[in-house]
Image (cartoon, each protein chain N blue to C red):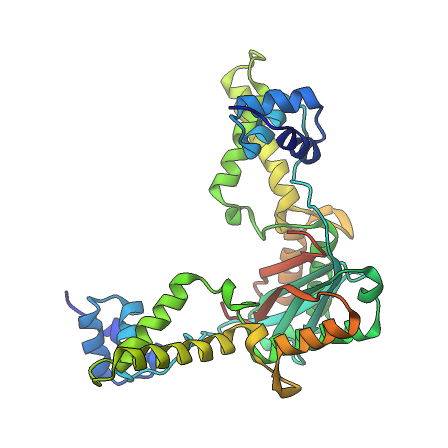
Length: 198
Length: 198
């Protein structure tokens, strides 16, 4: 199995080990990067306790704790430049998004993040609810698809109605803010804890 | 397959459906609670979109955002009564724990939370580092066990040295605070976001 220059470069960046050591380690690991890291650590050529995180994006990490301290949210929103990240407008947007998550309890950022088995379970329930009503398949499909849209609009942050203006979705809000700043704005992730809940 | 009264009770609590409906749904689902919930939802007897969270614990959800807003932590610490949760001492403890996670970057609360494959990968590396040195197996075991302890003390919050007093661990800190309040104090979970990192 041939080892490419790219693989060697990547392994060097991950471990700080020399080029020849990285080549040898990759050969020994048959091209598997993770295994090659282990090979280098065993030989002592790499000491990396943790994989170096490649920090690529700008933005803010912010939190919102609801009064009473029983619900809290941590959120990361990315933009393209530190300049935009430091503006009051971006800070306000991030704070509003954190409050949105606290108030409306999204579980995912976007519908692509919902596990396929969760979607299938919902779909099966909706189909079951319509069974025996003699509806044509095309109508059943349309109703099920509408119910799934509603499901996504409840659990996906970007599809939720914005708590401060329910005529737009959170996705609309992000797009508008992105147009104003001229940058692509992305909700990267959030965590929401409710006291004593799963 | 016999359906127990406990199962019926649990399903009723989860769905709010009637007792006979729950019995039938459990029989149809061969005793599988999750499936029985789906059966009830299909028949329309249960409308629960989400499983009701059983909120059992007191405590606080708090956050700490490091100056610069590039690192943030959300944490939940539980105690037994709302009375203790509202004391200034408990609030201060929770804030200090959040700062500890921000500064020292724990990945897990306790060593039992570290996935077995992660531990095995580390162990294999340590064993590999000692190979060919002719050390007796008992000595190798002892060294590997010591290295694993060090590994856990870096990634597990409760085993880390406390940032404000490195003569004690965070676990010691929790135990002392628990002794003062007379309650069992538990770090339930935390999330730590670093801007642009995984």
